[in-house]
Image 1 (cartoon, rainbow, N blue to C red):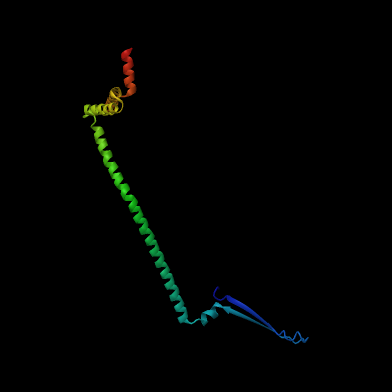
Image 2 (spheres, rainbow, N blue to C red):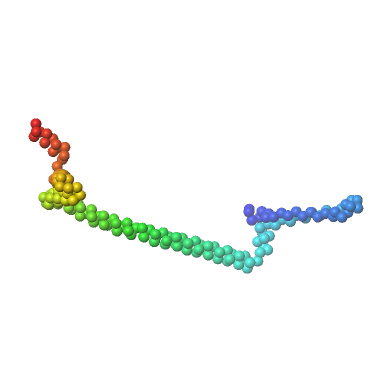
Length: 171
């Protein structure tokens, strides 16, 4: 077993070297071997000392665990606050975009009800801008082009189908 195995073996050799200078052959060598086992150490340790050592070790372990938990909680709290500070504006932007998208879908579904007004606005607005920036001819061209694009968009006229119709009329 592990507890009965020798822990430490020390060999001490002592010799008397003073007699070598005198050419005497009476030098003495003493060899001592010491074996310590876990049983010897266990029996020699005072139980109070062992209990104090165990208590001190447990206190250090508990304080280390508490420190680790405290640092982890601090890190998680800072990550949560950072996440919330990023998440809040994004959620607000998402809600705004969702609101605008819902309104645009509603307006798109009702576009044919307000067709003449939308076509007029699509013709007048680019015409006024073109007239103000470049003159009457550019304004007239922009107005015509804007009205035509608005008409095609509102009434969903397929441009390819329209060009086929026009070609058939002129043939």
